[in-house]
Amino acid sequence: MGKGIKQGGGGGGAANGIKVTAKGLDNIKPNMFATFDGTWTSLGTATSILPANTHTTGLHLWENLFFYYCNSYAVTARLNADDSFTKIQQITAGAGGIRNSVPIRLDNNRVFVVSNSSGSLRGVTVTVNNDGTMTAVNASLSFATASSAVVNISKIDESHVLCITYESSTTYARVLTISNTGTISVGTALAVSSPSMAIGAITIIKHSNGNFYCAAQAYVYGLKVNGTSVSFLGSVNSYKNGYGYASNIGETDDGNLFVASGSSILVIPINEDGTITVLSDDIKAYKSNLALANYTEQVTGNVRLFTENVWLYGAYVSSSTYALRIAYIGETPHGLYSGPSFATANGIDVIPYENKVICTYAQYLVVAYPGGTVTNYGMNKNCITKTSFREGSEGKVLI
Amino acid sequence: MVLITDKNNVVLDWSESMDHMPYSGYPRLVEKDTCYPSELVEVYAVEEIPEEVEAQRFCFTLEEGFYPNPDYREPDPFDSPEYAAGYEQALLDLMELELEEE
Image (cartoon, rainbow over all chains, first blue to last red; front, side, top):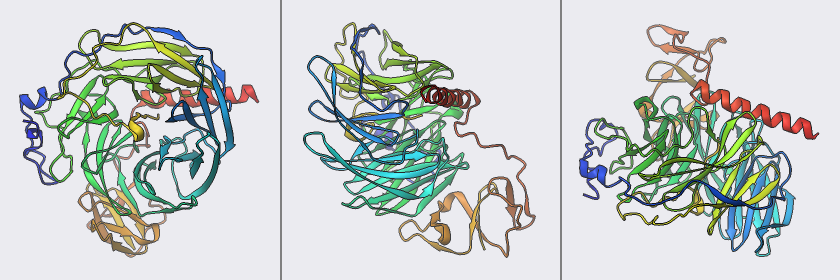
């Protein structure tokens, strides 16, 4: 019943028309996958690469080359065979804030990021040459956002980006058109007031149906892009059902949505027209003990997919402690494991790379190796896969 | 003036004029280049917006005109006191770190 989860609904208001069968739930229930003892066998020597005191988001470009955007700077660095890093170049690439979006690749050599500098936004286009050197242009965007708000983007195509911001209890979605020279035109804003669309977008996926779906704390919502116009595909309040905050989103094998929300994984059916309308009483959250952020510990950096079911992220633990965390979908052992802690206020970004994790904190890059044995992590083909959390199949959560 | 409210009569926005988006048909406030999902809002033509009216803080109905939103609460971007507190602390930490290094 691969498509059975989509039965019913169909219309935008078919709140009671969706019934998920037990078989439907089976379709997303993870089997037994990984064993992982939650330790980290080693943490490499930190290399001071990045500008200090910055909010950093990163992207693996190609081979051993990594891109980071920090405050108003773009940085490229190579990972060496001995796990040290070599900075290739650092350039001024924008007017920085501490709340920049995930960087995305527009095409092979162009990276795009939106930086939020006290509510004033800039779109930054960085061209990365094959040797890691860069040139950048930035353009002021004609709209503002809350100074502390998450700004998030998702690639539509090589010249269009969906940009989601939040201001004054309203979430705005706009299409940015980026020219070859880095100039940016802004499409009409779609405005949806909270609570229907919550607080911007924590995580965005481009679904295989061509639409975009966002996890945003208490809500999950959908957006359809047509040219430079954005329309609303409905929202589901996940928090109201006691499942916690939606922080990460992916696509199930049969084309519906799964959402990491608190300590649960929720499944949200997508109607044939792309709308999402209900987290039905028939849809029971699969309690996976996948504990992403909770009330006392926030996701501060990117959530990245390490294996098909193992996620990594930086977490705010207390006022002076941040930690690398690992969580995975499984039965035993399960839950949340600690990685190295960093006494820094900077969000920790984690990029899975081969069998290691590239971490950022403060001005440092460091390699961490998960300990124990990550084995048997192949998933049943009907389980949760297609986890293209973000562009380049790398997850991203910004808080 | 064109006034947009949500289905609970809460004032969302207003502008001088309105048209419709070509694809979705959503009402668009022309001067603000902002559209709203038709199914979530009501659109009114009003003569004027009183000075004291603010989005979210006021409601509007044809019968009652503008009146304070009885359910208004200060926006919490993270929709959770715990979350907001943590985030604020994180920002404070960051600011402290920046000051230290300056």
